[in-house]
Length: 312
Image (cartoon, rainbow, N blue to C red; front, top):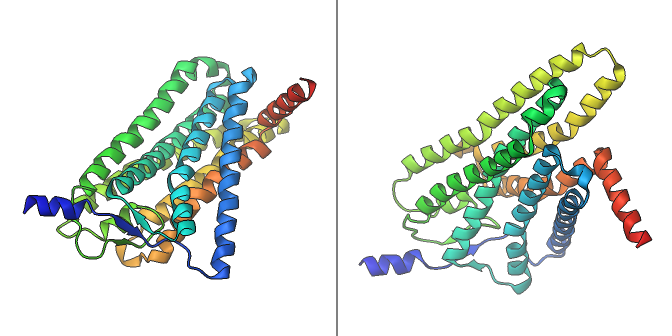
């Protein structure tokens, strides 16, 4: 009996995907692949620039490189499998593949939530305590922040993924999504999952609302300091420094809350797909564009690297 249950539990899942064989869906697929390539290029370029230019070897840009690495891994976790299934005509994903994909996307999502909150603290120190910045935000502190982000996301994901994939799956194994997202996989579980759903909700609160509180607190202090500044130029620089981070935070937290903190009665498969598509590919694509186009230091680093290559 146990052997039969294990065999059933380890069977492949079927990913419904996003597209059918129509021409409109083919155009949509090509558009998403273009966005995917933009995300990969933009985040890879950001990481390379920060590594290559010594002037960007500061805690702020180190954290930005970690954000780009998370975004790069995030889009690589879901989109290639979706594209492979669409082009091959197959829709299956193995049990191990589904578990791995679930762990990766959940781990990276949690890590990014924590990292964005810690980046707001970096901006708070830079604007409210500029003279103590090198002490409060040393290289060691930056590495500890990055490690804390990766570790918290991985531990949360490991617990939720291991428990979810240990449940028995019965009936149809069709996942109404384009990757193994938690709510979509959870619908296939047979048995009492009330305690697990409560745990997921608590984890969502911890990894979303607590970082939002930290971000709000940091920017509350920043706003108070900016109002007290007498120089209009200093105010502009402060707002320019913070605006990119605020835009990224709003996009990511907004999409994540839409996907994970809505009541179950208000969820539909289409809404889940749109929300997941937004934070799994649109946000990672926009992040490097927002930071690169609006950041003078990164733009100057790009020019220096290009000049260096031309001279060479």
